[in-house]
Amino acid sequence: MQTTGLSETGRQEDAAIEKAKVDQREPLGFVQTNLHQWGALTLFHGLPSDRVYAIVQDPEGLLWFATESGLAKYDGKRVQKIVAEGLPTGKVNALAVDWQGRLWIGTENGASLFSAGSFKTIDATKDYSISSIHIPAKKSSGYEDRATLEEQAIFSSKQGTIFLCSLNSLNV
Image (cartoon, rainbow, N blue to C red; front, side, top):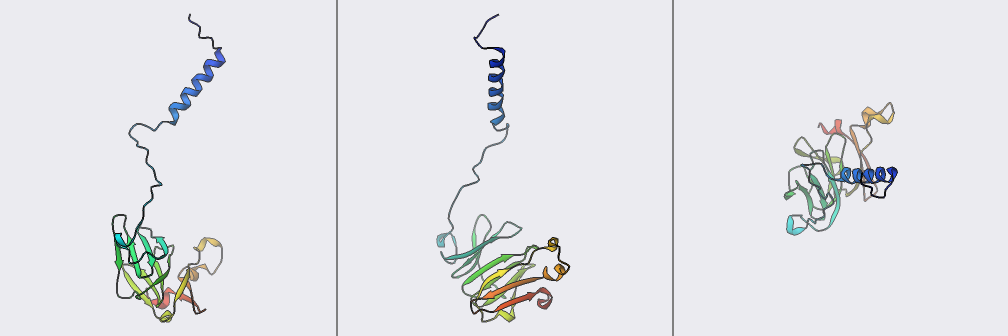
């Protein structure tokens, strides 16, 4: 029998180290990818402006951009500026996606809701510059009144006005 100068314990330690090295390798058929690849979306790529005030991602994976010159969406391949009936024109200050996947948009000329493929203007906010949007939490927070709060969004304007928007009043 050939001796290597290692005790039985030493050979067991070496075997454990080799096994750990094998366990760290990728399984066959898998390629290690870098999920932290960074890039930029600019005017060149189709953004309406290089000044971006908010970015949100909806449940379908689309990225929505609030910019100095309007709303844009990115599907992973291309950027599209959004111009639609029911969406106030001009600077977009704020964006929020609620738990049902609806997109709330705050602009310098009021607020809008994107739901079921169309934009709906929130008339009470016309001529107000909406600077922030808050979406109340889902029912799981334990309050008895949560059912009504789940159908609402809260807006604040640069003029200091607070709006409580109920979906029931929008007929959405």
